Figure 1 (cartoon, helix red, strand yellow):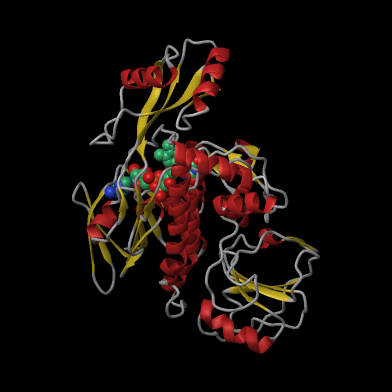
Figure 2 (figure 1 turned 90 degrees about the vertical axis):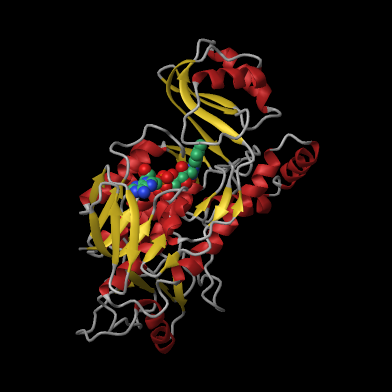
Amino acid sequence: MFDVIVAGGGPTGLMLASELRLHGVRVLVLERETEPVPYVRALGLHARSIEVLDQRGMLDRFLALGQRYPAGGFFAGIAKPAPERLDTAHPYVLGIPQTTTDRLLAEHATEVGTEIRRGCELVGLRQDDSGVTAELADGTQLRSRYLVGCDGGRSTVRKLLGVGFPGEPSRVETLLGEMEVTAPPETVTAVVTEVRKTEKRFGLGPIGDGVYRVVVPAAGVAEDRSTPPTLEEFSQQLRIYAGTDFGVHSPRWLSRFGDATRLAERYRVGRVLLAGDAAHIHPPTGGQGLNLGIQDAFNLGWKLAAEIDGWAPQGLLDSYHTERHPVAADVLDNTRAQMELLSTEPGPQAVRRLLAELLAFDDVNRYLTEKIIAVGIRYDFGEGHELLGRRMRDLRLQQGRLYELTHAGRGLLLDQTGRLSVAGWADRVDHVVDSSTELDVPAVLLRPDGHVAWVGDDQADLLSQLPRWFGAARDDPGTSPAG
Ligand SMILES: Cc1cc2nc3c(=O)[nH]c(=O)nc-3n(C[C@H](O)[C@H](O)[C@H](O)COP(=O)(O)OP(=O)(O)OC[C@H]3O[C@@H](n4cnc5c(N)ncnc54)[C@H](O)[C@@H]3O)c2cc1C
């Protein structure tokens, strides 16, 4: 009997497993593939995911293997410099292939005690009042208190639950692969520059050792996308779009992806939840899907752990859907808009030129960039201070950095007054008395995911909000604040 079975060992499932382990939850990750796949889908991490990794002390290993790029030009690929004064201590994009991200997340999840079983495909599930029974392809049955479907866009879990997945099917398809070319690099660069003036879904970029990452529109939409394209299909499409196939040969891997855009109607059915691509799919424009999945996991992990530990207040687990569903809806909308702007039709091209003009205004550039990098998200916690519902950026404190104090994934009262108390919740909430020139409010209560749950200096007011996020007070000997 496990507390949680996570179906799918992609970035979402692995991040969720690590979050659950922080709170001692017994978690099993079931992964269908026997080995990690070689396909590199995502190429980078945006600021909010970088922050999330920093909040859990995992960032250094990603920084060591990634490369920092300016966070500009991410909206529909409209070339613009990064806006000034982004609201984050990490105003860059971390270029890192998804295969590396997946490996680092798996290593971390294992280090903190997650059991990952490869070659295990979930094919059935049923739930009752006390738990969920998962059935694997080999007939094995496993039991857990909760199950989370992190099993990607074609999610078996979502289908077994019968959760609707409304949206639009793929209208266009793109071929993506890694291969060698015989054309000299300067020819490749010159031709690609020319073709990209009109066709944005096209590119050949060197990734080392003479290998290129090749992106080119497909001839149509394949009926069975699980069948990889052939090298001949790449050659043919490259000749159509560029007049040459660059002498492509020796493919490392070949794949295709569509632009279907869909959002699960519900993120929770009883004891089963959905996260990541299992809950939402959209074209990769702007590079948001993996980031969104990591951030889903970050929102869900502590809530599910609280439910299992028995202190979750009424409605906490349901707030996962309430908070994350609108965030995904917004990402779907911005990718729909970006796809329109990538169209070669005259109308969308005109709108693209107009938007390029508007992006010269730093406020417009910052607004759209913060949407993509997900630092502008504000959950609806009701009326209140402008910080309420937003995630708190990293701050310099007298005793270090704020994010260094959040590695354990607990709530945190950052108190500049020294007069407040979390007695009764000290087993769930840390109390740090410290001041920061970067924080201009007396105190903030942060949830384990770093979102601001309360702002103020009044103890009675604080006491009215602690139970909303951290459940009932428990007898404890009282706390003396750190700091
Ligand atoms: C071309 C392309 C480029 C992209 N670029 C970016 C980018 O730059 N930035 C970005 O943020 N996102 C990008 N994305 C999106 C990103 O790759 C996905 O959003 C991300 O992988 C989703 O992670 P996930 O863990 O939710 O799902 P997945 O990565 O799909 O993982 C799901 C896992 O579940 C396993 N599984 C499936 N069914 C079962 C089952 N029944 N039982 C057990 N295991 C199962 C699968 O084997 C898989 O390992 C891109 C996508 C594409 C196609």
